[in-house]
Amino acid sequence: MTSRRFDIKARLHAQCLARLQQLADILERAMADAQAAANEETKSSVGDKYETGRAMMQAEKDKYARQLATTLASLRLLETINPQEGHQRVEAGSLVRTNEGLYYFSAPLGKVALDGEMFFALSLASPLGQALLGKQAGEEVLFQARKVVVVELW
Image (cartoon, rainbow, N blue to C red; front, side):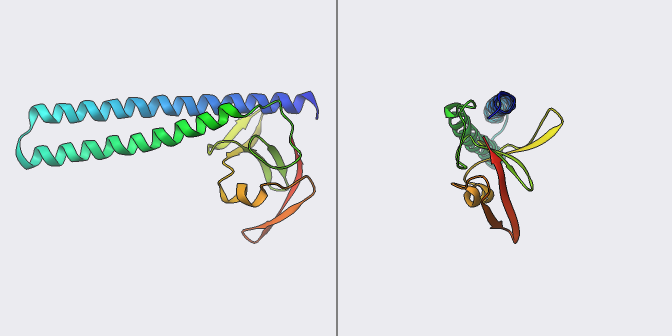
């Protein structure tokens, strides 16, 4: 494994951490805003309108709370990954080059651009993650009627 590959992996890892932290911050603010709106609704409304408005604000806050919990779980998982560690098989923390693209099995963030290359940050729980889990360089899987070949991983 070259140090350049691990440098790319470390910078990709840092970018994923930053994106997850930014998302967590946004969700925390959205939850606080929803709570403030619900509190304001309490002050200004009476009767059925009050109950409906309050229920809507609570549902919105609950939605943000679920998203925040998922985001924080992904952040905790990502924090356990050592980007300097090499991998012989696809597992959490693997950066995998396939015949179809570059995948970082870490957190479900989707496309991540770095140095003019496009990476896909995916969870191992994703369908592709499950299909490739445990595979080594040179192995292939049939995924959604396509042959996906693990070219290399680190």
